[in-house]
Length: 259
Image 1 (cartoon, one colour):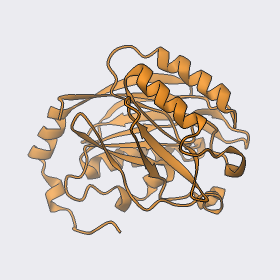
Image 2: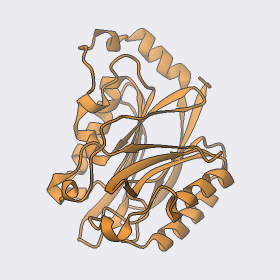
Image 3: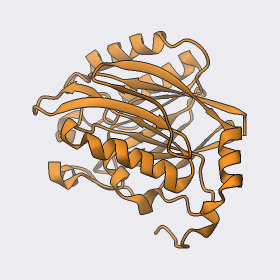
Image 4: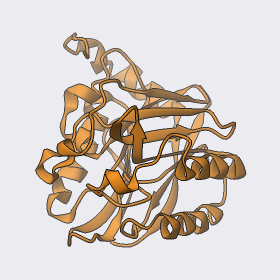
């Protein structure tokens, strides 16, 4: 594992169901990043907003938005991640991609679909976690509503070092967003990065952002509310090692398997 991992959080105001406008906005944000960055994180459904119209908006894995992600990852020499609407084998998925500069793509399909908004009626649920790798760091990819279900994120045996949650998490439940991100960091003794959006969508939902990063003790490293932001946090391998060595709580956890 390299001694540091640099993760850039991009917190945008997403233009509703306008892929071209959103891609143009992200290109400007990406071009303004200075300094080292290993991973750049976009929010959930970054190209459209949290839409229940996959029939009109879904793309295949070789579609324009995935190709754009590959181009941006190569141009900026970083891993680019975030979720978008994907059509695959006759199903629609809220799929989080992990796009590397060499064009290699991993993905995680959102496990917990937000029935309160009807997501379960339009999308298929995933059933497999993805622990991605970057410079020896292990990164658990999660999407929005997954945050409410700690068993799915459980670090059962030193499985991962960082959890990344991408979201469209609205203002009325912002307390849960902040609290649960911190809780996932504490209980899994890992860094947690949460990337949300700001602004208002076409359904009238308001978003505060509050994109955040927490260390393995749950200490807040960075948080930003209300406005668009681009910020890089530096995660320290030594901090992770020291906490897990001094406080070996994961060794005492209940044993179970994720099915």
